[in-house]
Image 1: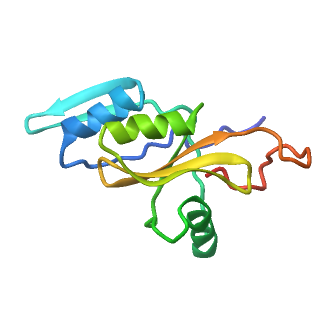
Image 2 (image 1 turned 90 degrees about the horizontal axis):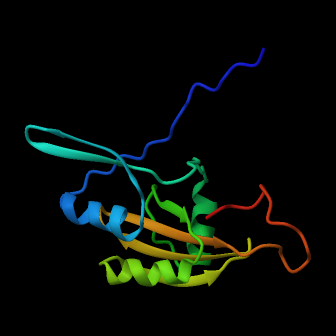
Length: 148
């Protein structure tokens, strides 16, 4: 009999000084559906669905490599959020129009995805990535390459 994993959900919690602006950006512009919303006497919280969650761990050297590929220099802190989207170029433009700062325009990566970098509400650095399919040598993008 197999044991079920102990973790059921990954939840990234962001404290945003401008809650309304952040909620509008992530829910209404980026399109993360609201699963639940709660309030206390002095505050509010919304839980937004973001598709499948993974935890990508990297060492400092590889984080620097990813930044160099996506941005051209080291810019991210120890936390960066990556969203897989169908069209990273279009979503980058949409999020920029909604107030995100574009740190780097969409760039084709060595792992064959189109990645952009933005500074978004809640002081989050975002990578938007679109998988481009098979590499030129015919190899399918595999689990050994970074996702973002």
